[in-house]
Image (tube, rainbow, N blue to C red; front, side):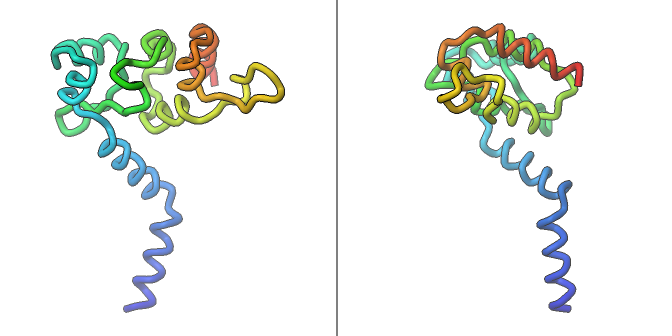
Length: 143
């Protein structure tokens, strides 16, 4: 029985579906509730729900409530240009892919050869043109 348990455990660690599910659950756990986001932004929770509907905030509906990943907030504000970028992203993009897209560096978001590439989130926070990130978001619909 011990050898069987060991083999099952090895397969679970290498199973991409199980890994993806674990990452998804971790994302939900680390995200803010609508009430927490409202408190952070110092608005009513109904305003957060409205912004989720209009795609100016990114949320994941899970078991009847909203979870808002933290990447979209900086201090007590929403990152600049978020609404424009969210509206350009494909509606059917998987939540983990959306978060990864925002936080992982992109070689196309590099201003000079000496600097490391930025993530879309870093690009927006640095005050660089929102339209650059919007264009890349639109390009995701074509791939």
